[in-house]
Length: 271
Image (cartoon, one colour):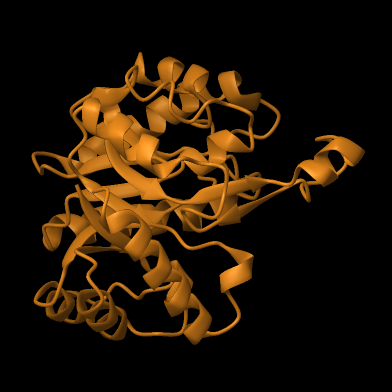
């Protein structure tokens, strides 16, 4: 395994600036978020410095506003075509969800939509990994829904961007299901979640989401020694991409960098 970095925490910095910083500080790859313009010349210069392992674009492709949905689909297709052109091996995305249909009721629309994306991919080795975040329009949020989706989508093209942080706050064991989906784990997000028990025990899970927050790995409830070892035993040997959404380490580039360096030190001994 190798440590990567998702670029979203560096909004406002150019891809080349991020690539320089990541390479200088021991990261092996970048997962590039939608805030970075798809400029082939800039990406090629970045690829001379560091591997670009994925593009990520998570949106609801079935938004109730047709114009919004059309824009999201256009942007996803642009990233697929761009990734093929620059030999970037992976697109990380959400599935979309149909308003009013719910999770299971959206499966057929999701499958049909991504079968169209396979036609766009053609003979390219590009693969698609669904992030398991319940936000941004997504049905691939739980082991139950993974099984439903993967019954209908081919394993050579579709898998998971496995993010254990979203399982923690859904009260799903983040280690237990790795073996079950090991052949579908194409990518891993290193992000943690802290359950704030004092708030949970007073307010419950329904009033608001203040009872949990995302943390950098090592600062939340996930045992990363156990997580990395479980992934290793399951045969995963890909990128572990640090996704920084920790509110305690945001607010300035200096704090973001310090948090990332702390995370790198915590995870580098494991991968």
